[in-house]
Image 1: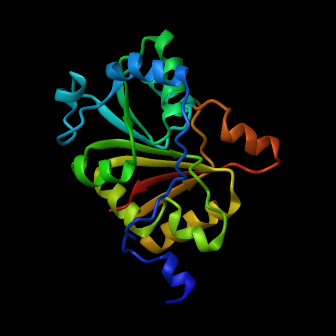
Image 2: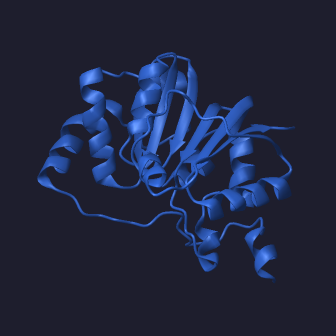
Length: 228
């Protein structure tokens, strides 16, 4: 199989992580997680049920890889009519996000500490998400690691199924190689209508975006909606 064809392989690869695990913690992180996570954690079992999980029926947004949570907190604060589920594997990032949300008394920010793919595949029913946010994921810039980038044929199919008919997938990266990878994957998939260059006004310019801009890199923004 050629490298180009392999990059467009629709089949998920078992055991291939889209993130780099980092498990260091601290007493402050542990204290924040113990005190704050119970207020925001989604149930550990069962399919997504907005009324049961959140106590209301509202549009649900899923953020994949929320990092330190600046975008998640900003979105939840700016969109009280939505419920946002922030999914992140790294405990220090989750703890920092919860600490930032605490003084804002956000009641629409929810957390899943783990990998987004099992959540999407096993617990999110078809057509239930108003939007999915994927901001500055691990770029995996080397060609041999392209299979680890989150955006692949099988994830695009999964997201298209989980989004509502008018749902949108918002993606941003400061790595040109990943931006080109997304363009190739989306063009091959043919299940999306793409608009480039629209940056959400509510998203703060910090974290990886600020680092990318400081390094002179261009931020690529994609808004993908289902075309069928």
